[in-house]
Length: 113
Length: 114
Image 1 (tube, each protein chain N blue to C red):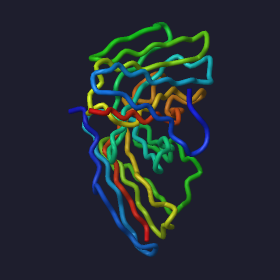
Image 2: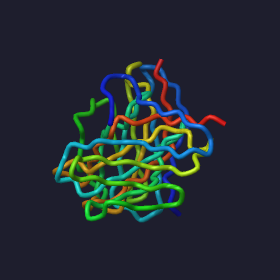
Image 3: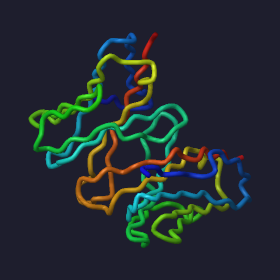
């Protein structure tokens, strides 16, 4: 889940380990979720998305799991590499507007060589 | 081409200056966005243009003035900014504002107001 206040949740892993980044969402009617990766000094980069009619979707080294019962989303990164070090945001459409995204507070992933 | 480009990468301006940020995409997207991002925070939506018309203004101060000259270009005109406006300004685009579509972000312009 996400913490409140100014502190960014952090996750530190060793290179080669698997990483799991979690996100709790609030709108039970949300039917689409996106994960973004933001490296230092860069814009958010789309990683993977999932629709609510699925509970799992896989990409290259990444897997997103969706648990609608508890309104929880996770991003799993296999064999984490130093290049995976970044802030990861989950996002969902803001109910009532197709243009607005509600972002999670973000998780800072640090990969130690 | 799946890229959103932004210029300049960095900008330093005084509180009396007028400057503009530029954004361009050639993906044929019809929705374009301006976001402001402070350190260690998620992006905050400022404006949305849909089919070249201003669709959303998130109560942004008038010292920020957006412009969409055509479907590929988005500008943000800056005038009389305050030091607290220093931030990363991100442009994004999406196909058309349909439910469940991804927004694609540019690299951002790092703005410092002195």
